[in-house]
Image (cartoon, rainbow, N blue to C red; front, side, top):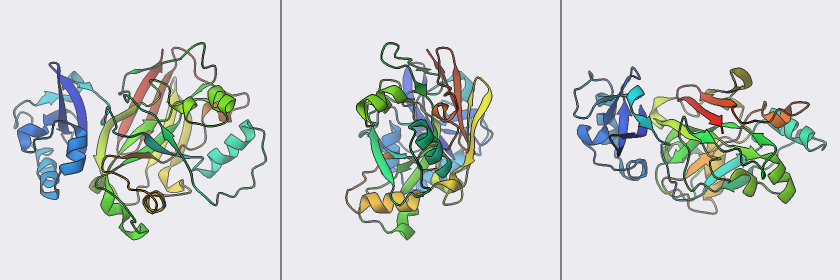
Length: 297
C-alpha cells in the first residue's frame, strides 16, 4: 500500500493510492482522520491500515474527494521531519571503494562499524522540485539514491529479531551532497544539509507491502543515463542492525526517518568525476516504491 502527502485545491491531504496507481483517495474519506503523514505514522492502528488497504482496491469515486494522481501536486511524504534525518555513510561495499578512490586513500575492504551522520531538513523537497545548484558555494554537486525507512513507534533497546515490528514503511531519499563542502569542512553535515538537498518521495510504501528485510532494486539516472544499479540486499549494515544498534543508546521516536546509504555509481566515483550541472535531471528509483525525479536549477 502506498500513502502520499499531496496538495489539491490549496489543501494539503494524506491519501492512499489505488492499486492501479491512477487514483488517490483522501484517507479522511475512508475513515482515519489524520491531517499529516506524521500523525498517521504515530497513530495508525493495524485495523486502520487494513481499511486503507481495502480502500486502495475499490473503484474510482467510491470515496469522496477522489482525484487522479497525475492531477494533484505530490509533496514529500513527510515534508517537515521533526528531527534531522539519520543517514548511513558508505554502506555498500562498492561505494566504500569508490569513496576511498575519490579521497585518494587505500581501502582495506573492511567495514567493522556503521558510519552514522545526520542531515538537517527544514523542508524536504518533493518529486518534481528543483535541486538548488548553490552556485558560488558548491562546485561538486552529487546525487545519491537511497532507500529510507520510517520508524512507526518509539524504539529503545530493540533486539534485531524484533526490529521489523517498528518499521512503518519505506520511501526514497536523494542524499544530495556538495563534495567540495564536505571536504573543506572535513565532515558531512554542512555539505549534505544545504537547502533543497533532501528530495524525498514519491510515497511511503507500507512495511507490510514487501518481504522483510526488503531486497529491492535501487537505481539512479542522470539525463536518462543509468548511473547506479544495485539492490538493497547488498547493504553492509541492514535495517535490523541499524535500529538495534542505535536504539541501544537512544530512543528513536516514531516518525524518525533513517536513510540506509547509497550504492556505487555516484558522480565522484567516475574518473574524472561527473558532478551535476544546472539543467541536469536526476531520477532515483527503488523497486516497488517508484521514481523520484528532480532537476538541478
